[in-house]
Length: 155
Ligand SMILES: C[S@@+](CC[C@H](N)C(=O)[O-])C[C@H]1O[C@@H](n2cnc3c(N)ncnc32)[C@H](O)[C@@H]1O
Image (cartoon, rainbow, N blue to C red; front, top):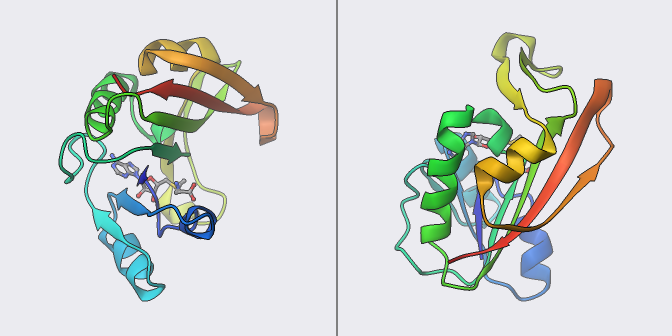
C-alpha cells in the first residue's frame, strides 16, 4: 500500500504488522531520511505528482494531508494519487475540516513554522475529492475542528 503525505512513516508499523508492504511519499526530504533511519520506505515527492509508477499499488492511505492544500489543488492531487492505484483499490483519506469553514495559519507546537490549514466542510471535502463511497465525521478536534474520513475506490 502507499501512504500519501506519510510524514516519517509512523503509520507503517500498523500495516507492516499485518504483513502489508508499505511505501510512503512525503514532500519533506527530512521525513524520508527519518523514515529510512527506522527502516521504513518513504520517498520524497509531492501528492500532485507522486514519483511512483501508475497503477502499481493495491491500496492507498492519506491521513491529515489534504487540509494543507488549497481547494484548487485538492482534485488534482486526488487524481494523481488515484492514478498510482490499481483499478478498484481501496483508498482511505482522512483530513481535518470544520462545519465553520475557514483558512488558518498556525502551529501549536512550532509557532515559527505555522502551516496552512484549509478547514473545509464535509460536503466540500466530499465534492473536491470526488467518487467518495462513504464519508464520516469524527468530532474530535479543538475549537470546532472535525476529522473527516472519506473512503473511495480507484477508477
Ligand atoms: C500533519 S502531517 C501528517 C503525516 C502523516 N500522514 C500522519 O498522519 O502522521 C502532514 C504531512 O503532509 C506532508 N505534505 C504536505 N503537503 C504535501 C504535498 N503537497 N505533497 C506531499 N506531502 C505533503 C507534510 O510534509 C507532512 O509530513
